[in-house]
Image 1 (cartoon, one colour):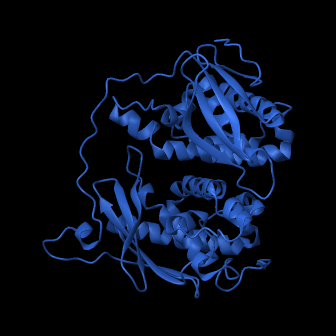
Image 2 (tube, one colour):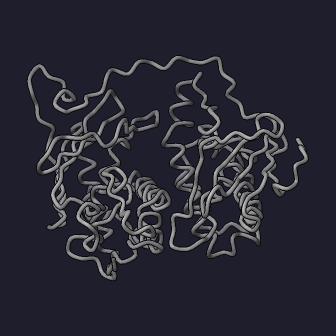
Image 3 (spheres, helix red, strand yellow):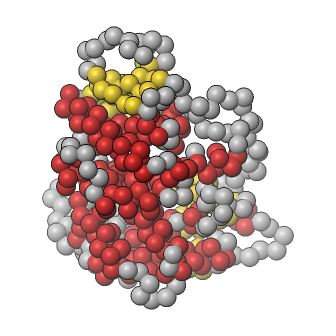
Length: 410
């Protein structure tokens, strides 16, 4: 089926796709608070039962900055721009009738890009009153958002469309934060989004108004932990099927275990993004920091709830992924950093996305070295179509060798 999306239609970018792959044109989402810093999200279709589409969205920081309501931004993109890979994933509306759109426009990489965009905007919004006044959104930020989107169908969206979506998203977010939840109504035909409070029912907790209400969460048992990265480790990146890479770790002197990371290109071109776990491995080896690798290896520091909640949890993982995807986009413009020079815009991403985390206590020269060492190894992995990656956490180094080289050097 031919898809004509050269220009966004009045009802979004998916009008040429089957109905079951289109965004609903009228829909509401209920943001229901759970505890002090979490919420669940339910979808309320025009007709039909409620359905929980997201569980446990959280602030994921110590201060409680309201980030648990951040899906308001994705819903604003959906309502006003007719675009949001994150909202498509929440609703199960990937455009599977076209494999290219399913993977490149609706897949994990597009979702990471959208999350990266939201994280960058949130950093600026914190310093500008969360955009309560018209005109608070700087043009330089809007230009950066347009650049981030330019490899995707969202490149069709004009700067003023982005500005409106950001402004409206933060208007909804401020209401959710002030009222501790609420219902967000979307009308895609009119490109409109609005807030209304959750219903108030005497002697009834608000979560009881929604199907599949969550059970009370018990406190996590603290395990006697081995929470440190090992002194040395070997990983293997392998293309398990065409354009799909998976990450394995050597836990038994040559016996490799799949640790659950599967990556695809998720783009229209084959630029090697499927090997991007190398960058997380470089962060772990050179900096002793990588929320993503800690999660994959089960090394979260649960014995310290504050560190676990702030440094190792999902929001920190998203921040690391966000920085990686934006740095990767810029690397394409700078020869994949082969000259080992980090451009100022990438340093800015580092400050904005990672500034709240412990990694910023590491000297900036070392942070830049982790990035450049990661790209050195990535280029070798990309060229060979996989490889073994040796990490020396004590010596702060990462090295590549071919899979055919079976010697155990650690």
